[in-house]
Length: 269
DNA sequence: AGTCACCTGATT
DNA sequence: AATCAGGTGACT
Image (cartoon, rainbow, N blue to C red):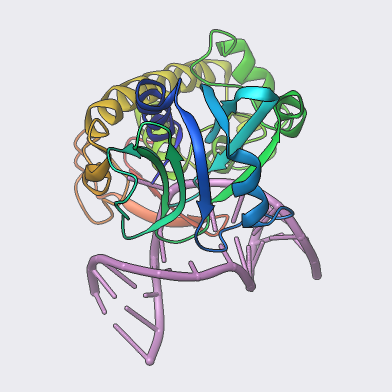
């Protein structure tokens, strides 16, 4: 599920629901990926600390705890983190469970179990995420930022956009949607795009992500409705064989870097 | 730059 | 039964 907008929605919800609460017990129920830490280690270290803040870095969720610890959650494909009203409830796909002092619980749910949870000193987090690229919704992401990054990359622009070392948070859907909005063919090499096109792409990335954050926040108000969070009006993603709403040509699906790419061969040039 | 592995579950 | 999935990291 989550790309930047969904992770952002999860974080905003957690800030309301979880900040200020104390974790009194924790359990990592299935051996989700905690390497090189063990699930028991994660559970033990997190217990008896208060949730001080929730931050997002790309698709990473950082739950800052008292005493200088940070719970680092990467939801990968199907992870979700949210608070439930009664700690005794067990959502079907719950993989980790953090009992809060007031009787609620923060749940990490992950159907595919591809996500990762680790605990580290807060002071180490910046260094651990240093390879993570620019935040596309921060003021530091300008047209010139994108131009400079693109100049260094010989990758197809769609692959470039999804590479978290350049920009942090774009995934398969929003990369495809931004390229559609900017009218750029996903196979074009990043370095060879004109400045004018990159400026268009910059505006498209910011626009698509901002709209998606708004939608995601509405869709995620209710944590258990997570599955239904398919509301963002996609133009190309998963629409192979259907008509382009802009030029009425047929949307195509191709493979890039082992992933599906959807685009309109008529207006993305 | 490409392929696979990590997992489960939905869809063909 | 086979294929696909909104992600990443570890391999060629």
